[in-house]
Image (spheres, one colour):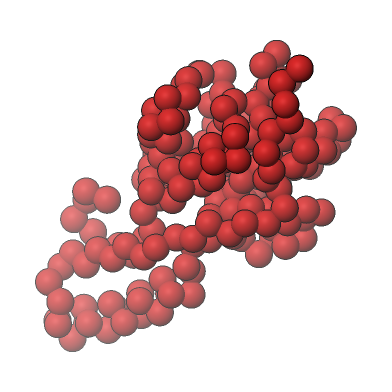
Length: 188
C-alpha cells in the first residue's frame, strides 16, 4: 500500500511468487492464473507475483494463460472454462483465491480431468470452505487470527496515541501443501 492509511496485510506479491515457485519446482512450465479483482491491491499484487515468477524462471508469459475471476465464483468459472479449453492447456493453474480455485476444481472434474494428475491447482487464502472440497487444496495461508489480534492491539495503540500514523504491518503468509498439486505428466 502506498496510500497513507493504516493496514495489516501479507505480502501478496511475495506469497504469489512462492506459490508459483512451488509449481515450477514440481516441473510445471505451462502455468496459468485466474487473477482476482485487478482494482484491488491484493488482486494486482498476486498477478504481479505470478508474472514475476514466470520471468524469474524464464517461462513465457502468455496472455491466454491469464484469466480474471475478480475473486468471484461466476467470473472465475468462465475464466477456468477458457483455460481448460485452450489448445495448449496449462498443466497447472494458480488461482488468486480459494473460492476461485474451488470453481476450477469443480469444472475440471466435470470435464473429466483428474486433479492433480491432469492439472495441478493452487489456491490462495486457506479459506475454511476449501476443507469441504473433494481434494485437499494446496493454498497460501493468510494468518487471519494473527492479523485480527494485531489489529486490536494496533487500534488500542492508536486510541492511546502511542504510535505514529499511518501504521502499516505486514505478516508472513505460508504455503500449505495438500493434494491438488503434483509433477506434470510427461509430454507425448
